[in-house]
Length: 335
Image 1 (cartoon, rainbow, N blue to C red):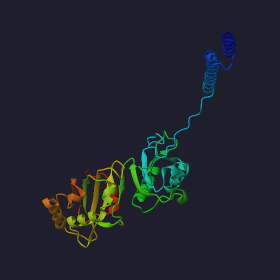
Image 2 (cartoon, helix red, strand yellow):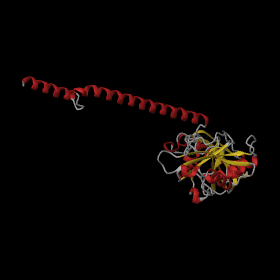
Image 3 (cartoon, one colour):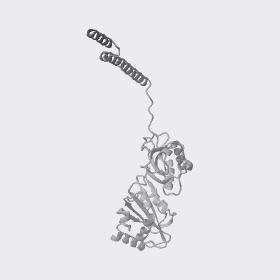
Image 4 (cartoon, one colour):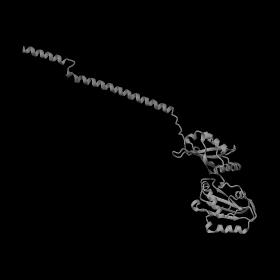
């Protein structure tokens, strides 16, 4: 009986070893499955890497055969739109963003050309558009060039252009730009003009009569700065000249560089009488101008700085001259 029980237990043990759910068989089966799974993942990763490398190679070939176009940067306020050395240059301000102006550059050049009444042998070129920081205005710098550009502008063209620039600077006329596109221009300045530029800061009418005195001196200021102090200049000159009721004077300002924004400025003027005067009167004026109080030509040096190169010349009694003619023909006298 005992032997039968042992035999039966042995048979049950054998059957248990052959059972698929037998835990002792699990390690072997797990090892087999893990190996197959790892092998499968290896082949999948290899395929992915191969596909990625193939795609990258294809893209490189496409970009090599068909390089992409590089877009040019938008120059909203570049300081050098064109590189030209114009002999005549000026600038003004537009209350517009540079990005709004640059797309209408050609229209702007045409408007400027029409405003200053140029001839067909000249052209206007916008040299730069500059928008300072976060401001809402743009500085426009332009040049006037001969056509073709390797020629020189005629004397007649320069004379006409100089007159237009002087009137624009004195605000006696405006640039007629397309208002809907550019708005109203302001702050017109001349930057460069061959032969210099002369303005009448007082805007007085020409006077004629007996020429008494020519005077000249230099100030280390720009035409624009003196224009802002023109009333004070007039009052102080009248005091130092001791004008009589029958006398008047004219003053013009010249910058020999042809700029309204760069110093120095030569102040030239004349005193004219509408009646015959005595030589003693002229001598008294000379004596007064030679005294130390008049050393700075009567101008406040805290406002106008130091007056330099002071000169004056008297004319024979009874010589009748037009003040504008005198100042025009003596543009470089005693300098």
